[in-house]
Amino acid sequence: MIIGVDIREWQPGRRTGIGRFLDGFLRAGTFRRPKDRFLLIGDTTCEVRVQGENVEVVRIPERWTVWWDQVTLPRALKRGGADVFYSPYIKVPLLTSVPVVSTIHDLSFFVDDRYNDRPIDLWLNPPFRLFCLLVVRRAAAVLVDSHTSARDVQRLLGAHRDKLCVIPLASSPAFCPHGNPMADVEVCTRYGLKKGYVLYVGGFKPHKNVPNLIRAYAALPKALRALYPLILVGGPLPKDLDDQIRTSEAWNDIKSVGLVTDDDLPALYRGAAVFAFPSYYEGFGLPVLEAMACAIPVVCSNTPALLELADDAALLRNPDDPAAWAVALRELLEDPVRRQMLASRGTKRAAQYSSVRMTEAIFTVLDEVVRGRYEAG
Image 1 (cartoon, rainbow, N blue to C red):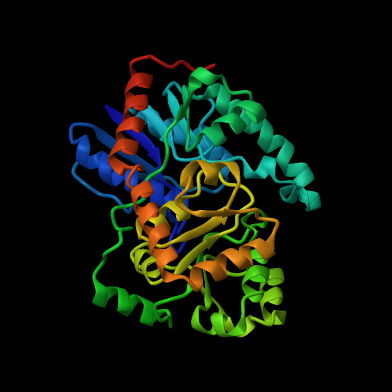
Image 2 (cartoon, rainbow, N blue to C red):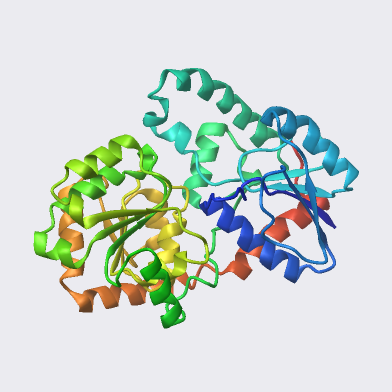
């Protein structure tokens, strides 16, 4: 079987959850399916993070994304003899003879009104929503990370239940409790960190709710903040968030380290005392799983997908209640026994999300699509 895969998510200097998911899937998939051929299709700027004897890379200049998606990509799939095309996000060619499978990780751009704050959003979101409706209709199968996402895709895009497949994500084996201690110290030192901090990993879009995490952290006693600084890992800070930190009484105890490499990220998790994830909306919540896999106690929002993921292996709090978050953070930071208990629950919970199981589940769908089990429309 020849499997076409969109790899444009692998952009230089850009580290995303989708990129790590795609990396894990293809590393496992190319190893477990040596007789299959993987046709990795990207633009001229993207990286190639997975290679092998059964991997072929096709690069296509991308001057206009819509043309690339709908014209150039189908041509490449036909030339490469692809039996099926897999997209790791909600982007597929609508007119191609090759059956397509798409993963929809979340619908935050429809669920959260803050994505419609700008005037341009009123122009862009309606046609994008129409495109998403067409993707769901065109795809032979739609993969989602959680039952929460499945309900959203059914409710907002009208997807037929039989076309939806819930396949939870998995963290890389690199996210584990015990790394190389010397290497971990070297990584933390390189970022100017000492072991023992409150960690956030993710983006800074409105639904990530980082401003409320800043408010909760600033409410901690000054002495506790001095022992456990707040470390933000992610892209550049938006100006409003940067201004909030600069004017916060906790400004001296908050540090943004920007983007980090995938190789460094496990060590940064393992160096944390507590992981905090206050998001309003997630389709899954991969950073929460990564933190639990590294045996770091987690405080996260009590929103549906995170409840589904963490269950009783994290402290779950209302994302709109910074005071409750401050109490949860203080309780954990002042109680190492409780931190250890929660960390132990987290590693057991994370072990249920196997990368082998995820990869095999995706291949089961791809195999069934090629055999005609799923049909578009």
